[in-house]
Image 1 (cartoon, rainbow, N blue to C red):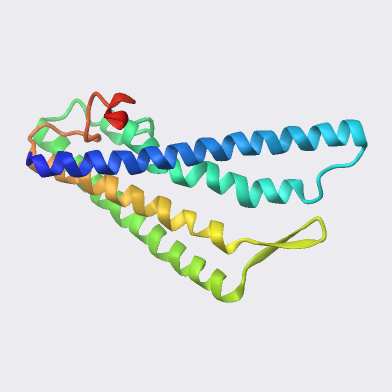
Image 2: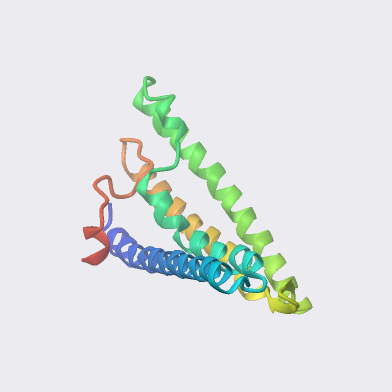
Length: 183
């Protein structure tokens, strides 16, 4: 593998780690918001107006989409390679390349149509009602194509690795851990 490949992937790892931090902050803020809502309901007999909608439309997308590429790169998602592990290495490699190509196409469609929807949301000023007010939704819709775009980049890195090496793999770094992100 060329050295530029690993340097590029190191930069991409940092971007994924930033996404992970953003998602972690989203989860923390969602927790604080929900705890505040429960406390206000129990102590003041009044809930935060539109709390459910705010969690659903703001905190959930922030908690999920920025960290998708990181989660994908760790290999925690189920893979069909578990099924074909008894076949020859050439068949396994072919199978991995076909699966990565299919995933790349699906993620590209998700990114493209997600971007089209987000742009339409900006044009229309897409908003949701919560607590008697309208809150803008369109900025958070961009998290879908951004998350899918990061997944596409991850798939491309894995695909390149499988084209260069004879051993099939669904990860760029087999010993991936937090040290890879901090160095």
